[in-house]
Length: 329
Image (cartoon, rainbow, N blue to C red; front, side, top):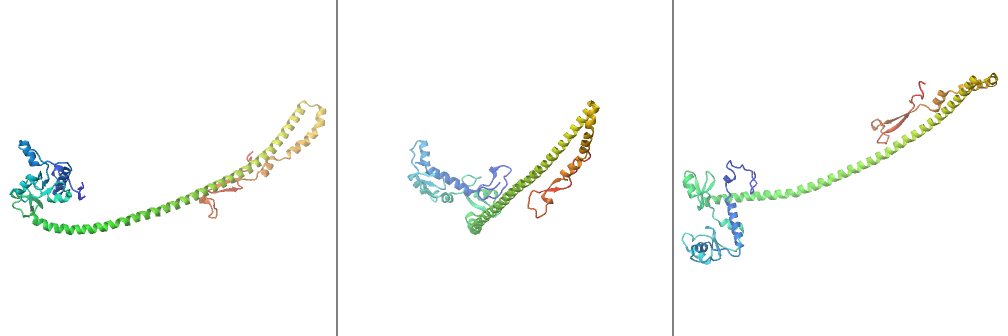
């Protein structure tokens, strides 16, 4: 998982997060934040007075100073007493309510050992690259190459200063890249928006052209249909009229044969013969072929179209390959 401070990936120890090495500076900041929260209270009680109050010797006073090393609050009187003691004469006291920045307070806070409670960290093991206390040195690092933590920090500060300068320069260069990326993103969006507009415009024109050609082709088909249907209806009427004449002749002739007298037959026989010859002279098949010439309609898709044909859907082709009507009758 990534470190929340430097973002570097690290592996969680088998014993869990509790075994992860602590960042002492972050620990100081956490303590400083707690101190500032306490300062916001109307009255932070003196820790020494509180101890005395619990023993019944005196009442507690509001604290005015905070000892960085002892991490305790003191009133004016207790603060002077604390500063006058030999063991705590060098301790740094911060005025409560001064509202120092967290980093400033954190730098003043002493780093203490996690293993040996209350022991300040003042030794650095060069072999293990660990900041340790004197007890850690005596028990675990006595044979290692160690040095005073202040001396080591001088060289490390120089190194950190150089690294910070390099990182600062890289940060500047990295920050300058962002506007270029943003510009390229804007240019890309603008360019592709133009292409999208061209595609949409072209598609709309093609859709309009296809719709126009569709209407044109359907109109051609409708015109052909109406023309041919009219021809078929006309020929049909003519054929039906001739059939009516034939049926009329047939009925009259059969009636005369079955019911007519000799006088009736002699009077109508020759005229019926002439009418029969007249009816037989009417060639129905030839008349239909003449009235309905060969006819075929087909549709050609654009792949079969000539480049000069502007219809995007296709074209209607009329040919003379239509089978003769009544063929095989």
